[in-house]
Image (cartoon, rainbow, N blue to C red):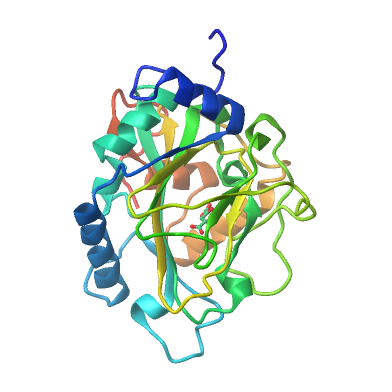
Length: 298
Ligand SMILES: O=C(O)CCC(=O)C(=O)O
């Protein structure tokens, strides 16, 4: 393992870039997804918002502050999840310039475990538009943490005016905190860590096509969109297919697990928390592993 604990090596990251990730828990790669491809993904998102695509298996979420405002489509939908079985959006998760970086971090056997396209529509209440500070590992019943990594690509310029992603460098080396709903507007399943606002945040200003890769214990969140435009980003969480599953009962993730199990049961998809994670995941590259034991997917 040598001096590297949080990256495997072997992909495209240089030693310096690996060292930055090791020290900070994230790495920003400029201009690594083509604008034309991002426009294709955006068109697909709009088709989904406007009901032109079968969304069976996907989760389509509405901004809670805009639900009663008479807006629809892209002006209302703030997130699409579980798109790994959508032929168009899945192409993001297999995009070589993204997967090659992921391979440097978690190794060559790669499963897409979580997928999200996050939209911040204009005119949302700031409390609903922001994403509270959190750690993604809170949501995941698989380990080890260092064999999981996220990619998050800006689909347009993202800065402090329209909902910038912020990170707290170095927190990937620390503990998994307790997460609860923040006061005020509650986006379903958006738990946050309370009481850590004093920590120094780094705002990751990104141009369209830039991608930030980060560790699942890294504290991060995003601000509200205060502009009259949209703010879109697409993200995938990847796991080494050989990650092992854990029972989160009795841990700080127990509550989110039971909320997620209920959400899926209400959609007619029964199963344990672990069953659901296996069903929503999809092999991206390399040998199948512990995620690929289900015969069916969502
Ligand atoms: O896109 C954002 O604003 C933040 C998304 C995020 O951190 C998440 O969904 O875990």
